Structures are given as C-alpha cells and as structure tokens.
Image 1: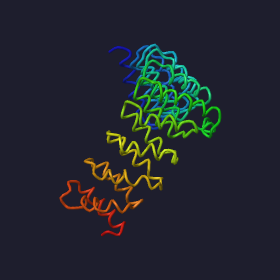
Image 2: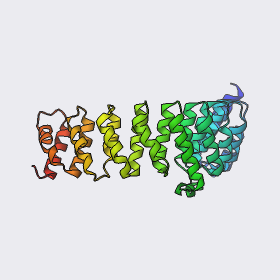
Image 3: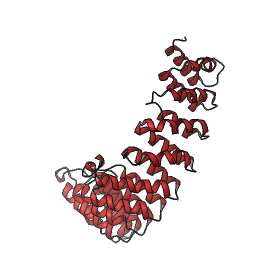
Image 4: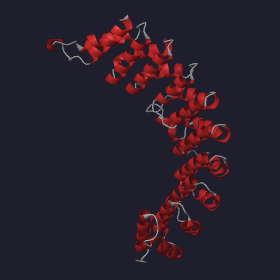
Length: 327
C-alpha cells in the first residue's frame, strides 16, 4: 500500500477518533496538527481529504494553511478543496487568497473564488470583482462576480448607501447589462441592479426589459424594475403586458405592478384573464383582488366555473369575486 493511501486511512481514523486521549483516542490538538501537516503531503488525494475535513470542522486556525494551499498548490483539485474549505469557514481573513485565486489560470477556480467572496468583499475585493465582471474571458466567472457584488459583506455595507464605491458597482453592472455577450451575465447584472436600486439604474433596466433579445434577461430586468416601485415604470410595464410573449416576463411584469394604484393598469390586467397560462392567470387575479376593476367580473365568473381545468385558478377567481362583492 503506497504512502498516500496509508495517510488517507490515517486521516479517516483521526477524524472519527474520540475527542480526548484519556478515552483512548487522539487529543484534538494532535488531530488538528495531523490534518494541517497533511495539507503539504506529496499525494494530492491526501491534501484534498485533509482540506475537506478541516472545512467540515470549520477550523479557523487552519485558515492560513488553507490560504497557502489555495495560492501555491500546483494541483487544481487541491486548490479547489482548499477554496471549498475556506468558503465553509467563511473567514474574512481568507480574502487575500481569494484575490489571488481570481487570477488563477483555471476558470473553475476563478469562479469559485468569486462565489466565495459573496458577502465578504471589502474595498480591494470590490475593485477586483469589478475587474473580473468587466474583463474575465469566462461568462461563468463574470456571472459569479456580478452576483458577488450584489452581496457586500459587513465591511462593505457602508458603500451600499450611495457612496462613490456603490456607484462604482452600479456603473460596472450597467455596462455589463448593456454590453455583455452572455445573456446569463446580463441577467445576473439586472438582478443585482434591482437589489442595489441605484439612481442611475432604472433607465437601463427599463430598456433591457423590453429591448433585450433574451427572455431571461427581460424577465430579470422586469423583476428588478419592480423593486424600484417608481411611477415612471408604470407605462413601460403596461407595454410589456401588451406586447411581451414570454410567460416569465409577463408574470414578473404583473408582480412588478403590485405597488401601483395607477388606473391605467386595470385594462391590461383584465386582458390577461384571457391568457392560456395558469401562472399568468393566477398572478392577474391576485392583482385584480387589490385593484378590483368592475370589468373583470364577467371573466372571473367564467374562470370560476367548475369546468375550468386548474382548480387553483378556479378557487382564486372565486376568492376575487367574493372580495369584489360578487359571490
């Protein structure tokens, strides 16, 4: 049996050994020392096993060794294991190693590093993620970087209130929304812009929700627009209801109009009661329950009949009629 396999067996043994030497097992300090040393074992399989075990243990004292492994190990699997362990431990101390990993030659590692930075990044991390979201050749990496920028950590949350730092993120994501060739990256940018709700984002999102060629991007943009609850979005959202063919986009547009009391929304919402989509119908009826347009009554009565296919939609229509005093 080769040395690496012996070491793997040893790691399994110490991982499940009793906690105290007085019980006939291995003292925790000895166990931890063995795992940390194993991070430098010549066999990559042993290094991977040790990193995973340290991650399972959420052992913060192992963070420096795992950071060193992430930055210096020549085996991709070992670097990924170190990154996975660090992300489980979720220690901000690991940020310098994540920044290095964002430059790794392997796209999977760059993507995992961007994912790990979600909720942790600081000023340097913000700058690095912006660089990645604008320039990385991999769309998967750019998407992860965009999503990470939408989840600032405790050290970065002060930037979310409209400072220059937050505007840097907004500007970068608007550029991505307009120019990125990957629809998945554009959709991610739209979602994050909807969370940030920067003062310059609404216009580009309105353009994307009707003008982007990809339905997933339009759906994400419509959902983001709804977060703003801005009356300037009502007319563009009404146009989406009249002209959009994709079900997800239409559903999101109806949801986005829930905040509005504009009387113009009644006609397109009642029009959606003719939809063949149960999802669209349910959402339209849900909004009708709030705005109560009289012109919806006849259509709701037709939908509420027992021969309508979807029981959930039938019951929703009956509920709306009751709320409108038409029971």
